[in-house]
Length: 439
Image (cartoon, rainbow, N blue to C red; front, side, top):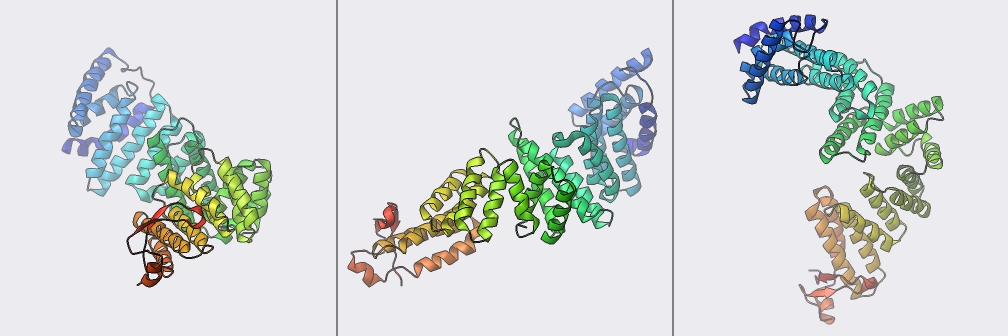
């Protein structure tokens, strides 16, 4: 432990000097080559044994003697230095270690390139280990994202926005910049998620990055600010359809569909390139105008155009809710059942089915109507037990249904007793449920 504490400043000085020198892979002289190979073998063996502190001294010799010998030298250097940083209690020594970590990233770029990728890692680590340096971290990550675009790592993209949020909190960034960079970052995230060859673990990382960026942005921007800034951006670049698509996502994500700019933006996007997002946007707008037939037409289009897109469940659910509002209960159930095929525990979909069944019950005579109310109750009960986010709503619907149950005497008149299994005939539903009476 003492070895690295006393010599870490030397690492910072020496590797900085070496970074400017032209070196062969294993050093400049035969002696350098011998020393390089010996220390390479030694530090790598210690790393295999997870003995980071023992690996430090020979690793440092390799950095000083032959910095172009191996990319793994810098990958392992990050492991070594971050281990020391996390264990260090002295603020001054910790600061020097963090500086040395930054130098290691710079040396990796010097000898092995991959500037966009490595700058991303450098900026993320700086923000992790010294959040007070968010201005410096932002500059590093900004260059990384400008170079890497949608190839940037998920952590780079989310940390970029985190550093910008830090600048905003210090009064060094504006709401306009927060929105503009949000649109840019989310464009890269969406492009990464839309890649055909993305692996599942990478998809999870980008999805989490999207959630983190959304969380930061939605805390800062209100609809009035967003509408004004979106209007200015559209006016400045009226033909930039890529930007308009992303801005439409912003307005939808924040539910700012009442803003003046919303309808014209949605129509422009949909006219230029009909997509599930633009159809959904217009459907939302018409639903708020109480044009449910028009809204349902666009919602159906959103579902049809969403082949393999990440928002399929959102579109199906909203289409079902609009269908229910327009009294098209069969279609509402169909959309809800499609949601359940993807998310079997989706409480909103179960409530939607319960609502459709209850509405059908209102058009039937007793005792058929009772069967619909019992069945609707079953779906509400399932929603409450499977999805805590809808527990209160489902509980209210259960109470509404139980108030429509028959009395024991009314049920008895039809040879129906509590607990008996029956098939619901109302509206040709054909599902089984249990008789319940109002106490």
